[in-house]
Image 1 (cartoon, rainbow, N blue to C red):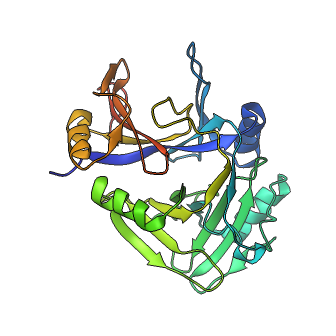
Image 2: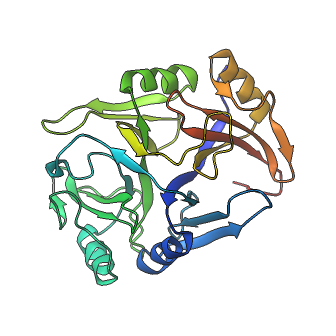
Length: 281
């Protein structure tokens, strides 16, 4: 049996000050604020997204630092969220004029690669992002005014890449998309749910300061959300493959049915089957 995961809907970005970050993402990057509310006993739920994109970023309150063990010549070392862009140089100039910091590792400007052009930048908390402009324009090129056309990659920090690969492929049923290593850079290993374009970078690293809660506790908003059309079925499939869930059974809420689980490194995920009036299409 195959899981019914349809798409990734939410990705966490840990920030130390939600208001400051909201200002950066909306005013400097031009994102939209999508959701902003708080429930008693729960952290503030604040999400943003590039215009025209369904995937939302959760601005989760906390502090974190990732230790990669690489030098500045490695740039982001793979620890970045990547966006496809139609014009990297134009996007760089526009964002730089708004005060966005492009000093990442040993690089300060867009870099020409064999496959195209890239430019990396960071938010006020040091979270890293990369704009990618391939030599051959893909479906994301719309000839509009958006800087960020599509999210292509998001990182997941893991302690052991081979162990993580086994979990995501054998446990969750993902596909391995890329696996190679260049001199002086970490191993580039990506996986993705079948049928989805967006890829997860399984990045070897260690949290020096980790705001994540224990596997049996609430994530505090620092989690990835997968949309599914049959949450209960997916939970049974994943349990049969050894995936550990926080609750004995999925929970029913007005917004839908959901279940929470963690990977071997304690990264938090949610399966969400939205109520009929929540998401369509």
